[in-house]
Amino acid sequence: MIKSHSAASLQLAVLLFSFVLQGQKTTLSFGSCHKMDDPNSDVILNTIAQEQPDGFIWLGDIVYAKDGDPKDLTQKYQRLAHKPAYKTLKQNTQVYGIWDDHDYGMNDGGADYKHKIQSRKDFFAFLELPKDHEAYQREGAYQAHDIGDNEHSVKLILLDNRYFKSPYKKSKEKGQRYQKDSIGTLLGKAQWEWLEKQLQSSTASVHVFGSGIQFLSNQHRFEKWSNYPKEQEKMVRLLRKYKVKNPIFLTGDRHMSELSKMDIGYTALIDATSSGMTEALTYNLTEENPYRIGPTIGEDNYGQLTIDWEKNSYKITFKNTQGDALNVHEQSLSKK
Image 1 (cartoon, rainbow, N blue to C red):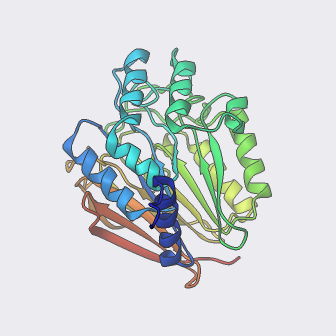
Image 2: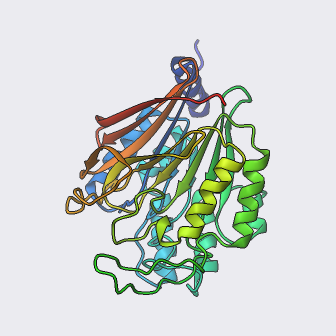
């Protein structure tokens, strides 16, 4: 008589088989702007789960709560956590995440949001962040995770652009919502100190930075790192100072997807914006972005970063809800 395998044994077997098939590759899927009650939510979550990436990264607007309503935010996080399609995703891959504004609790919110402590509690509970994780010992939601082994290592750094952000001031400049703030902060002193230590000590081959808002695109009127030019410049200086290997920003927020690239001297900096898992729009597809490479995408989608260690290269692919490729960018890994 043949004994049946337990569900856990079967799941382990599937993961091991997937690892063998992938060989020397690391795959990280990512996305943002997601409403759980939209029909495409189930479709896209199940598609990502079936691909069994090494990780899935939320890049903000995981849920859309009523502005300033902590009870609504708590309920929405709990509802998504119990959604069958999301449970399937968690069974098939490791989930990571950082928030943006609507899952923080206030549209374009920052350090002055009065319910941010409760938001952080709900967010960490949703992520099921281990209680011994160092993120619990400080303010904010920023985190670092090491993925892979010593030979094929990825440092995932999730940056919090909400908890410490100086409040915006309305802009009088045509075409801009907010003034550029050269005095205020986006990340806050403690997070900057933590980030520099992460970069200084890292031996990873690839560095992935998760941010709720775009890092490179600087012409549109909405939220972006360039609203805080000194913070943006400081980030680039740190990358140069420590010659951070293969820096890749993964960003969200924009309800469209695009790829941006900038030469920062010793290497190229990539910003892959994947936005609109269920909330993609088309009105902003022609806006100016001096760093854009490739097309803009205005249909529901998610992104995927695939690192091929044998070929010493990586691909960034934007996929529709069914997993079909919409755009692919391939680039060599730098060994320096």
